[in-house]
Amino acid sequence: MTYALWIVQGLLALLFLFAGVMKFIMSIEEMTRQIQMPAAFLWFIGVAEICGGLGLILPSLLRIRPGLTPLAAAGLVIIMIGATIVSLMIGPVSLAAMPFVVGLLAAFVAYGRWKLAPIRGSSQPSALQGAR
Image (cartoon, rainbow, N blue to C red; front, side, top):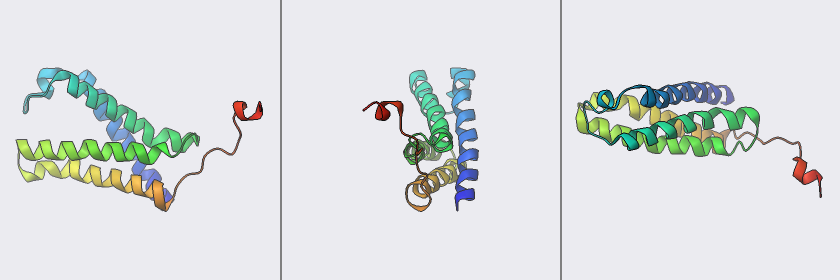
């Protein structure tokens, strides 16, 4: 189970990092061609995707606050629910399949890292704890 979670975490992290960075590289006209959304909202989603992508990997990999990984995955589930709804509004149901599946994978990571295979934090005490 741990290997599956790490693979899904890595793939989702790459996907969300790519999607978030693209929201800053592409022009607003290109992004709002099919549905009108404010630029500030799209940039906010881009920042959330970048932070979520980093949050899927870094806390678990570095073992610093690994409890943030399921929270990042849960936040990305919320983003993907919105993406699925917007996809259903602008086109056929088949267009909404991709964000729906990505949302399910993010939910798998959230549940997996929260209940099935949580990662323990670093066992080394911090410098502040040793100063007591």
